Amino acid sequence: MEPAIGNAFFKREFEAEERAGFPRLSRIPDTSVRRFLHYFRSLPQSDAELLRRAIAKRATGFFLPMGNPIDHTNAESVALEQKARALAQLAD
Image (cartoon, rainbow, N blue to C red):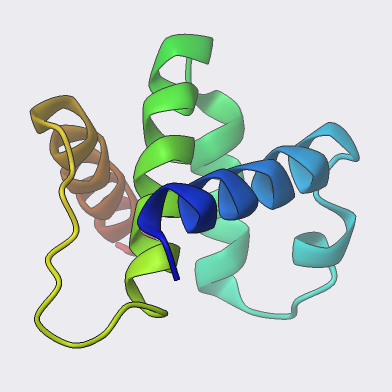
């Protein structure tokens, strides 16, 4: 899979789910998913866009051959780290 194609696909899928109000994700009876949705909905638009891109790249990475690193920008890496910290705090 070409990384750019995978990134675009997963970003479009995430955006479609978001536009619809996360109906599929909201049906998942998992606390982690609910925490993520709560966190994501609270983000300013610019931060949400960074996280969308980072999530799409991470999803694409699962379809690439081993040894092909996922190249997140510094801002995308920060967005993923902030998400991880925020979700950990919501768990407390």
